[in-house]
Amino acid sequence: MSTSSSPTSGNLKHASTQAKSDQIRRTGRRGWTPPPRLSLPQWADRYRRLAKVAGSMSGPWSTAAVEVARGPMFAVTEPGMHVITTMVSTQLLKTSFIENVFGYFAHLDPCRILLLQPKDDAAVQFSKERITPLVRATPVLRERVGTSRMHTADETLLFKSFRGGFLALAGAGSPDNLAHRPIRIVLADEIDKYPVTHEGDPITLAEERVATFANWLAVRTRSPTVQEESRIEASYHESDQWRVSVEYPHCGHRQFLDFFLHVEWDKRKNAAGNVVEYRPRTARAYCEACGAGWSEGERLNALQTARWHQTRPFECCCARHVPLDDYERAWRGTDDASDNEDALATVWDWWASDRHAVYRAKCPVCGAWGIDNIHAGFHTSKLYSPRQRDRPADVASKWLAAQGDEDRLQAWWNTQMGMPYRPHTGRGLHIEALAARGEVWAAPVEDGVAVLVVGADVQRTYGVELETGLGA
Ligand SMILES: [Zn+2]
Ligand SMILES: [Zn+2]
Image (cartoon, rainbow, N blue to C red):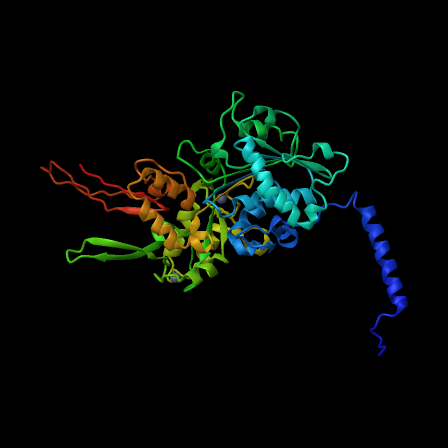
């Protein structure tokens, strides 16, 4: 019965002494051990637990389950990063993103955190419905947050203390909430709904309070509303403008999924050739290189290949570079458009991260990083959602149902595309794309010609329709 591998009582005793001394050593170290070098996705995969709420998953967090969340999460732990803007369709990654940022810092890098909601009651609701279940479900947070015996009286729904810091939740409409206590991290949720107070813009007021910290961080989130009025859109435009690509399963071509360029559905036509019925339930995404359509299973697999790319235009080596246009030109110019890794590599390079999720823009001439990495802005649509009710067929059905109804169109652009709505037109110019397509036309004009007529067809680019028509 007894073998060399069975523990003897002597071994057990030794093990328990060892455990005790380990524990003492750990306790002694706790005061000075630097935070483990984990990125936010690594932290969430290792420590975060999902609360059991009706209708949702419970158990360990998995970043890969919503792969598109990896880029914004990675930015949080990126050295030198100060502002993160997420302009995304509803229920994709926004709320869990805020929860993860709070959890990471409360656990590994404790500090003073302010979480803003549009109003006080929304802050209370966020605390009850989001923070409390998060802390309860996640052991490393349950051990730390709200356990202070000394400050029991201070513990409320709007104030959660932990060793080395606190989380204060507040409504953005109350300037008093924004004027006191230095803080290091501002998490501003639903920023398009903030009122402007008599003391000024709530975001500016809140972010002024982080100025005393060298490693400050501000996170701004919202699905956008109407163009011009949208704070989140303005913030995204100030940022380095990350966009996400996925690899098409058929041929390996990597493209930036766009509802207007890549999603199509069946139409029934009458004898005269006019469309009499649209069949949005047949909608699917198509590959821009080989033309193949995706099954839903293929779309879900493709979402696992999500990568983020900086797309803000920039100047370097005396030239203007527009990453998305440069990429398109590069892969269309190759013999085999599906083999586009070379085209990708002329515009972006992998930037240190887990699973190569993040690609920074580089100058095609000198190879230097083209865009700084201080304000990261992320934009994505429902086409990147792994949820069953967010299939391209669902997005297309909502698009068709919204036609002719301004309110529903606005809701569609905001919730499905994560883009602001342009009232009355539904379309706008992508100025960079238009300028990049400019060509010089010149030809001799015969004597006696009195009228010149120029015709141009209709093009679409980057999700907004672009119409050009010239006549003279
Ligand atoms: Zn293809
Ligand atoms: Zn350069």
